[in-house]
Amino acid sequence: MLLLGNDIVDLNETGVRGKFNDTRFTSRVFTESEQAFVKKSDTPDITLWSMWAAKESAYKVISKLRGTPVFSHRKFATITQESIVERLLVIDYQGDRIEVEVLACADYVVARGAFSTTSKDAETGVRSGIARLTPDAGSEQAQDSEVIFTAAERDSIKRPESAQVRFLCKRDIAEFFGIAIDRLQIIRPRVDGKSQPPFVLIDEKQCGVDVSLAHHGDWLAWCFSCPESGLPAAG
Image (cartoon, rainbow, N blue to C red; front, side, top):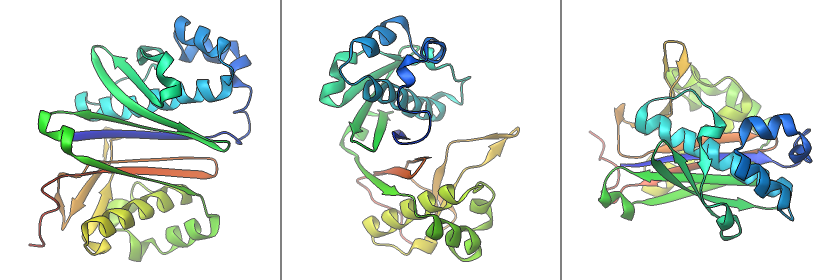
């Protein structure tokens, strides 16, 4: 199976610009070599948040691969810092290496990591989406969640951003596979009080589609895997 993780950072959110000057923050989050790389970068904001988003994406992948670890950003080490300009980072966590694609523009940095548990998954496709948060639409979706989301989905939807990104991801999955959106659920259960990684159900059954959701500030991001076998037929 192909395991995915993603993250997005709104570069215009309060406190984001100039964060590379916060040595207390950078020393907590980044290794010494990562800190040095940020300092010498011509675009330190982009470099810092690219590595941050890559670490967050890798953490989501590792949580699916190993179970949710205690998240220490420094333990998710960037080992290909020079490749940021090539939009590819590799994050190492205790020997597991997660390849992460990073894209940056004036408004945001978005990252998507993937790890294949079998060699066949290398041929599995991935679809991604990015959208600006629409507060009114998010509120409507949250208020009308009785129709759009199942009770199990609503248990993990706490904010309009979460509702909107989940809806957009479900819509894209349904459109890509040519199925009705009401056959799909994106579930994020809680175990011992802790939220677990989200997964996709079709007709109440878990399928081979992996998914990752993220939101920050005014931006939403989602991605899902596209198994060659497609989705199971309605049964």
